[in-house]
Length: 178
Ligand SMILES: [Ca+2]
Ligand SMILES: [Ca+2]
Image 1 (cartoon, rainbow, N blue to C red):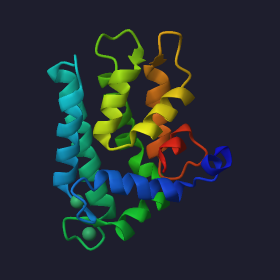
Image 2: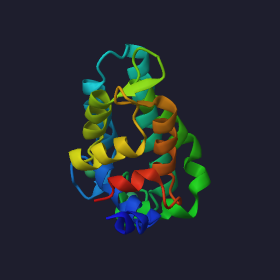
Image 3: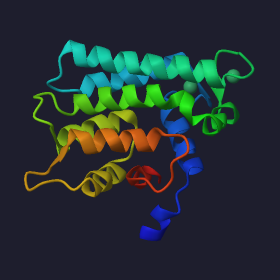
């Protein structure tokens, strides 16, 4: 089990990220996919205000505009898997997008602002992104929850940055790769 996790590459994760973002399973990333995922996440973001949800929506919009600008090589308004894999060639072009997304998503996990995230809300947000329940539970455990079963916003935020970074390997989020 452990070795399987260690063997996960950035390429495996790229496939998982593509499939997550292809919300309607059309085989292409499109603007509508990012809007749909944003709505799904906002719907489960219990306790968060409109400002925090707006920040999340803005980060998904930025995901799409960056993906389209950098990866839609044939300019047909959608990004195929083959086009998407080019993200590993220019990881620096995604730094801002990934950071904004990590800030916005992890903030939704901490609506009361105490810097801690409870497992139920973490799970709801991650299932809304599209990860499987088993993988989400395993990841939460990797983040070393305290006696009250809470993790810090910081560790999740950093985990998101690592996970969505196109070229990193051996990251905690590899637990999310089936
Ligand atoms: Ca799609
Ligand atoms: Ca395209």
